[in-house]
Image 1: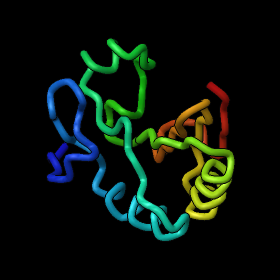
Image 2: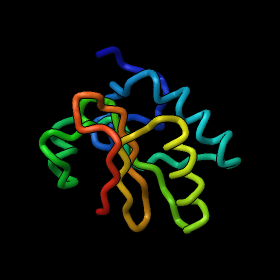
Image 3: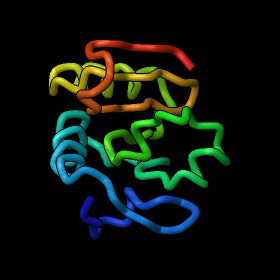
Length: 115
């Protein structure tokens, strides 16, 4: 993996930033589609941080292939889901205050789960 410069995607505990480079373009397109900035709460996670937050041992965050974005209203949640699906981001987790977006092709595609 190659580290990236964008601090929004860095691990919250150690600052390591091995996010997949596609996320830069995808987030920009998402922001354009929903007409507002996106707040990323979790991007790349080192193993230690992933374990500390209760992440799955096979979390796509640890491969730099997933992000979590704040989603505080039902309208924003709808806009985000609609945009992500249209952009062919086909692994989506819906939680009360955030949405997990995942581009890990090694996992089951076209799934949505509730957390």
